Length: 421
Image (cartoon, rainbow, N blue to C red; front, side, top):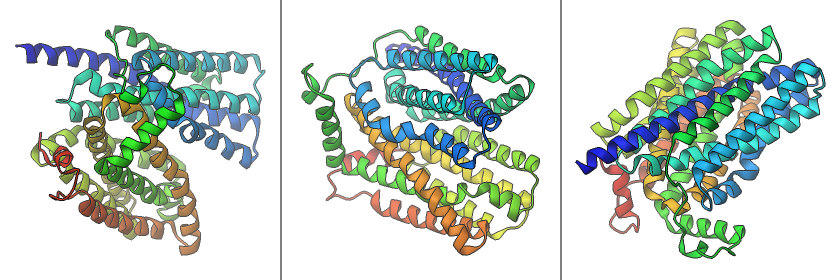
């Protein structure tokens, strides 16, 4: 009886969190299209346009670690509310400036940077709230639903809404964006309870500074070999897969000879695959184990990119890209659940900060290397083939690094990956 009541309470809290996440991801999707479109109306300088993309990404590299430490100090629900409210104010200000004709490219840069900083806090808070909201028993399902909210909001709804409304009235997408973030903040008022992390030994004193708390997180991560290996695996998947993903437009348009409109459908198939991955990942975990899904998903990513490098059929290429999206989402769900299960709640923000700094930091490196590789090999298809073969290597590394062993201090923790439910 008590277990059933706790489960219903967890489901109710999860609904509030997912509703907020859905609204904020819709806002993110609109903004990721509206900001570049606005920038193009202000300048055609390719360096300034590229710089906007870098500015939107920069906060994850600069602030993921301090944001993680902050979330281990304060109430995480309140941090998420304040971050979404801040995004609503900044984007609302942008809407006013666009309507008044007073926006410049430097204002766009400043707004993108401020929104990016708030995004780091909001998204990280949503992630670390999951175990506090649902408990340990429903983490796979909760993480899959959070992934589905991100895919639907940013891929299926946000992008089309942002581009369509911008074409109608340039101020419109920024108004919608601001409203979405405001709703995301307001919805969380329904998420009752306290979500402050329990202080750890090194941070019980109010005088403990941020540097000491970050050092505590690094020490814990260094001492937990399984989580450290998972960070390495996640970073390698991010790095190697980005070799090809950064070349997707060239692959579709130059190699498969698709039109720009057809490329939109190509990317849409990836979104469908991501949703399927989010839907089936918990079932696959129950049928086998988290380790099996992690290894199999990474191998499927390799299979998809290898196949894309070998085919010249647009239909087969799109289907294989959908397979990659499904597999990588399933892998991300397993990694997220393992992180939530293995990391103590009072350290989760800091460990997540390190994790995302590594994984997100690998993205621009992989993109740059992918461009160099395509230039050297003469074809984006060969870059996809190379990325696919390397992903098989990552799967092999993960197989060795995550296998159980009696001499491993993390043998007990490894059960998290091997248990089937």
